[in-house]
Image (cartoon, rainbow, N blue to C red; front, top):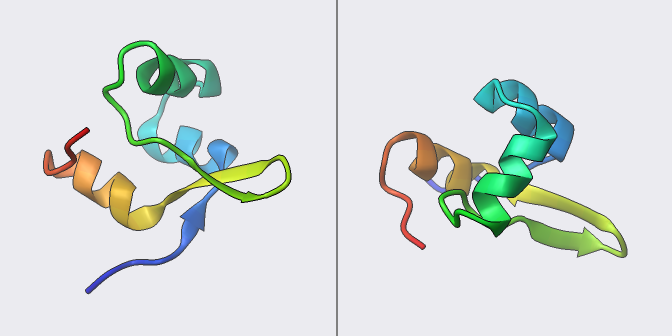
Length: 61
């Protein structure tokens, strides 16, 4: 079942247990974290399904 909920940076930080700066580094520099989606204007977030795949080791770049 696909999960369509969007997770904010603050919530993602709490889920992962790392700072927002670390999450950005994983995504931009190391490319070891799913890319966020632009929701509207300057608002971004991650699909919960992408997070679940990353946690389960199923996420691919």
